[in-house]
Length: 173
Image 1 (cartoon, rainbow, N blue to C red):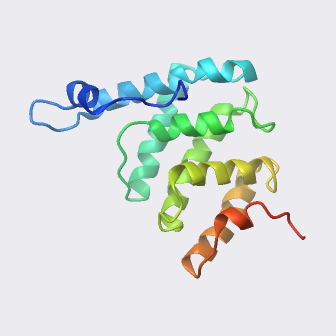
Image 2 (cartoon, helix red, strand yellow):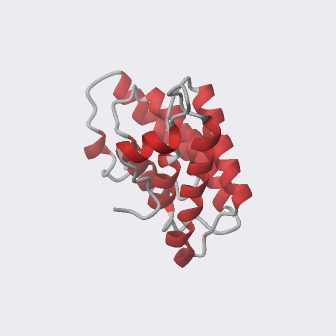
């Protein structure tokens, strides 16, 4: 199991995250999520990529805004950790653009979860985004958002498209 991904079981989740009335407390969840994000530095350091606590907080804020903007609900920060894991070896990431690019990728992820009608699992969507980002888009968030992901979302909304096959085809342009 990946070291930066959440690994809580039901008992730990209940003991650590449920308040008196059985309600999740946002503050505790955010603290846990920030810790999970910072733990990913252990994996990404070999790629000369690390996040500060302030950058981890920025990523959490981006996530919260993206969830609100896309009318989504998610518990924990596992998606951010997964994105960090998948994108850590991208040749288009450097320490200079790391936090900002992750922020844009997080926003893109939640937008396209809606646009693809949740037909693609989180892991598959992240993997597809990574493949397109490193491949056809050559590290361009604008191409990823405006062309490749829009094309995929359109195909999913309007007919039986198998993203697993098309994602691996080469551009014919």
